[in-house]
Length: 459
Ligand code: GDP
Ligand code: GDP
Image (tube, rainbow, N blue to C red; front, side, top):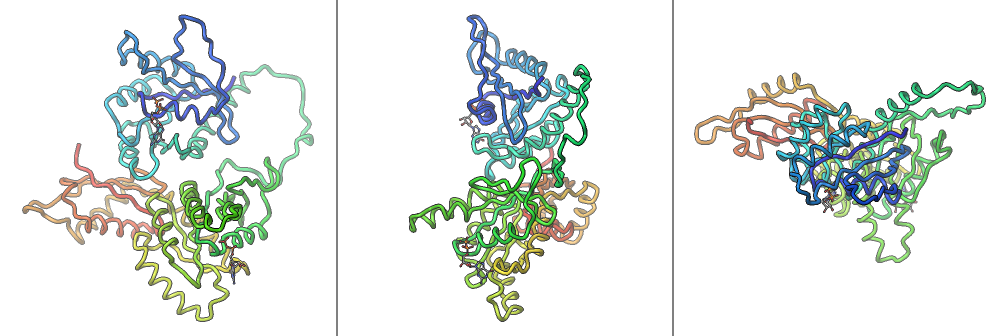
């Protein structure tokens, strides 16, 4: 029995789009007998190494005499019965609607395993909807973009333990056979693959910054990944390797660019690659050429990485060519603060891709940035902190009534996002929000990651 996932949710949230992305062309044949309503579609899905059956309930829009509510309820209940796990999808751009709440209610009652997904979450437009999704009481929502293929790795990560549990159950249920497998018939890889997904890193920067040299240097020094995929896995856009003990998937923009032959296409292509790389990555390494640092293109991509909520590490390459290293470093740091204030505290590492110097520090900075990006602060800590912040510097009192900050909680990670409940959220000046964000960054040691802050009113 294959593991089965049902995609449920109100019309137009993107269920079919997600279904198509998961199933591709491997659509199962549907029994097309007359009189049978084809309201559930089924297909064989593939996500990473995981194969499973997926059911789409996107037949709801078709007009029938039955009320939408009733039909929805019936379909959803059927899907729940058929599936091991329900993926409940909402639209991150619209936020939570009353219909979503009806669904949540049904699922909370009927389904043992529900995963919540906020689709259309690409870019910033989906952030508030993602945040609202917490209110459904179905756990942490996955941020997906079915259309752009984002969040699929997170979906996979969430499904793996559920699929494993299903597998174990299936093995227990299976009739026992008398065939023994000799231990030594099974060859175990010396690199034991863990379920941990490789850390997704993109190296971006202007042409000639040294991206290819850097990637080749990292590759040259490291043992290639062995294990199930034996040897290095390399596709046109990425390569996976073991970098000082950390499984890393490197997004190789330089490799792509080198394939372009026409010179004037080069610039354009590298910008587009940079954008794709940023979307794919958890940590973005902005590689600068020490000789010409912080060019317009570098600033654009660093800013984009921040807006997309990625952790950022700045690496200054060709450091071997610098003579006045101390002075240069001081200047670079000052320039960085001035030009990219939104990335305050992001690590700046000097490297030489050519000699390999500084790569250990680059590795450490990437791992740390990723850790910070995933950081979770407890509500107790946050509220103690909020009290101190307010005491040190109270919020303004527009019209004589002081704004009250009541309560803070961390709503999300990757990157960290916080909600502060307060009396008049729309009256909080930008400068006060900045004060809080800077405080969070310093007091909870979260350099180099974008921090999101939402001020919310009660109710
Ligand atoms: P369903 O009714 O839930 O099956 O929704 P569909 O899959 O038909 O999608 C409804 C609309 O949302 C279509 O216009 C899709 O192109 C759009 N859509 C689906 N996924 C995404 C997404 O990730 N981002 C954005 N912006 N639009 C999406
Ligand atoms: P890409 O376009 O970003 O992939 O850049 P490349 O890796 O092709 O490097 C561009 C040029 O810079 C090549 O001539 C490299 O040899 C040189 N280069 C790269 N890294 C270093 C470095 O750390 N030090 C020095 N001196 N030259 C470097």
